[in-house]
Amino acid sequence: MLIDSTVRDNTAGAGETTADRQGGAGGGLYTDGVSWIASSTFTFNRAGASQGIGGHASGGNGGAIANHHALVVRGSVLDANSSGAGSLGGNGGAGGGLWNRGVAHLIDSAITNNVTSQGSNGLVGGWRIDGTPGGHGGDGAGVWNDGSLNLQHVTVDGNHAGGGGLGGWNASYPYSYGLAGGNGGSGGGLWNSGQIVISESTISRNMAGGGRKGGDGEAQGGNGGRGGDGGGLFNQGIAALFNSTVSGNAAGPGTAGGSAAQTDPQLCIILPCRAGDGGNGGSGGGIYSSYSLTLNNCTLAVNSADVAGLAGQGVVSGANGVDGAGGGVYGGFTSRDTILGGNTSPAYGPDCAGQLYAGSHNLVQNPAGCEIDLAVTNNVIGRVPVLLPLVLNAPGTT
Image (cartoon, rainbow, N blue to C red):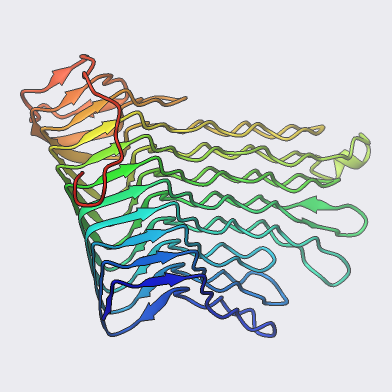
């Protein structure tokens, strides 16, 4: 039990340098029992970094808290914590604020300004050493959940998922090959593959990570990393939002493919001489969902998907990436008494890219790209909602 306390400036242990092990979890608190936290602050804590000599190992998870069993947090703040960094070509750790694989309840609390680490830059290969692609940015800057999570009267604001790492290259004699850049982390505010219920809460000003450039090579360039999806919430589990606001969140940008420097026409008969493709832009500025999503009496406004990266340059150019879609929501969902307006996308579906399966009494400002089922009735389509700017209130008053 932790009451009226401050947990500050702690770091979990680093991974072993000889075994490519992941960095330690739970910079502020690691719990596999029953934990109760009230009226407390976790700030400037960090999960451990990986230090594997061969690369590929991920950074530690849970900058503030890593929970494996049962956790209750009430009237508390998780602010400016970070996950651990990966070793060469390794991914950034997940869950800058909270990493949950148990059962967690957060009430009247704030999860703000947390980050996940960016993916580590890829290894430059040489004699008997393979290069590595860039690592991916950590997912779930505010919260990463693969268990059961309940948020009530919680503010999730200003969290930022890590960007990808720069692609390495293989120095295969006599010509080098560029490797892929890392993808940006998904779920700037929250990442979910379990079950999550969010009520009377605000998810605002969170950002998914940007991809990183593919490695340059003589014979071939590496593909650029794609932008992270789900600026506010990335969902591949079961998610339900009630009486909540999702506003001002952004998916991550894709980035450029690596170049292929070789231009000799004779060599290009036997070598690819092809530059890397650009990475796709992130989709679902507010919410990205690939499984089950329910919205009830919610507002999704001023969220944005992001642009793709350009092709690398070479005798054979790569392809440009595909811009992100679904500024408000990407994916299928059910909705009732919900507003989707003022969201933007460089591709299609500014407010919604996907299918609205069931529900009623929704307002969708721009339905382009949003397939609304005939069973969804009593909707207002094409009207601009009159919304005041979002105000960040104290925990418990949103």
